[in-house]
Length: 244
Ligand SMILES: [Zn+2]
Image 1 (cartoon, protein in one colour):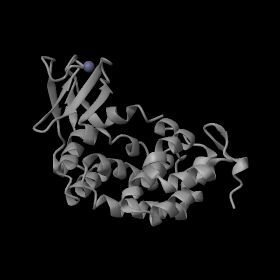
Image 2 (tube, protein in one colour; image 1 turned 135 degrees about the horizontal axis):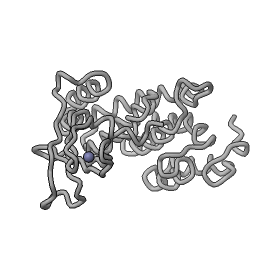
Image 3 (cartoon, protein in one colour; image 1 turned 60 degrees about the vertical axis):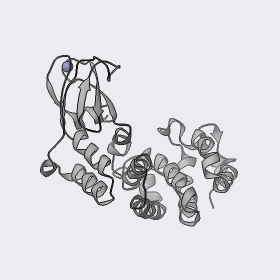
Image 4 (cartoon, helix red, strand yellow; image 1 turned 180 degrees about the horizontal axis):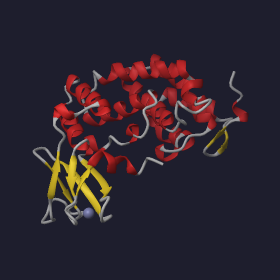
């Protein structure tokens, strides 16, 4: 049994967390924000009680309805994303490996059935979190929003990378769709994708998520800074904010 009174969440003692989890189980979409406020505020900080909740969340995800399951997987994924890496002693991903494996398999299965690009990308990030893939499990949102903001590695200007329906471009003007200076955003060639980028591209293609697969080529491509015109690697800049 978990002694919740010895654990913490964002508000202090985690004594109330089992009750909060009960309410989340009864109404995942309605209680999701409150649960995250306690266990994973801003989706970037987790506490001892957050990791201790993973076994319960995996049971919930395995048992709940299809509609509810997405919320449970996203909650667990956000917590897993905050876990110290698998290489650390006593990483929650190792301590709760059995529950994490269940969550991973459920996310994997659900991906193939997911129609909406936003849900698909969120589940993809959750899947990577459960597998202990670092950094990229937080960097894929732009695959459905079509936008990334990065800093030029040479002149430091903020560059907006836009992955549009027909092409991709970069601009340093917030007002990207007007008369701002646009420079090329060049997608990686499919045959040049390797490692994680190849896996993401292949998976999204197999799942019928053509726009996500196309986005992967842009995110792993190259860009020209609209200000200083220097060519830079997009994935290096996208992940720069997350790499210590
Ligand atoms: Zn520049």
